Amino acid sequence: MYNLDDKDHLLILALKKNSRVSLVSLGRDIGLSRSATHDRITRLEELGVIKAYTVIIDEKARPMLRAFLTVKLLVGIDTEVMASTVAEKEGVISTYCLSGDIDMIVYCECRNVTEMAELRDELSMLEGITEISTRNIMSSINDNSGIR
Image 1 (cartoon, rainbow, N blue to C red):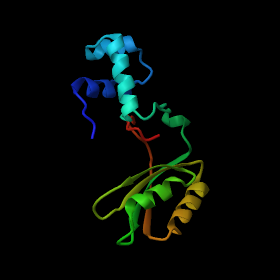
Image 2: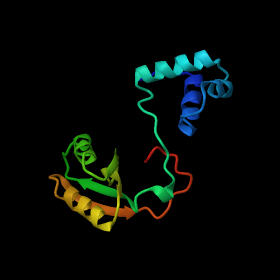
Image 3: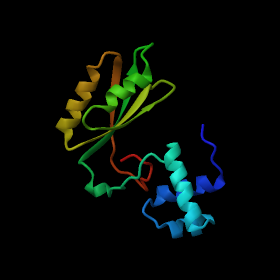
């Protein structure tokens, strides 16, 4: 587990909003000097807290079809192993292991319905998956969740 203080959390939140903001602006917003801000960012990167910087794409520029697939697995299947296998498939952006009646949610982006159907069929053929439901995304509001 990471030992982060309040300044670290403020810095992470500020970087999530805009990872291209200057060190001077970041420091001013969280009450640190430019050099102290730089040192904290470097430390967070070295610790692996900050793994990457990303680009937020305007929804209109995204692929034509985005969906969440809800997945149920056979009892005894290792959810994390299955999530890693699913994550390697073309069109899969991210996988989430859950508790409850759904074992996994898979976020996908495909150019069209045919690609989405092919991806869904490919996943349904994996040993251990018992059920897949497709939930097409119609729109998203204020999407800065990290799902890209």
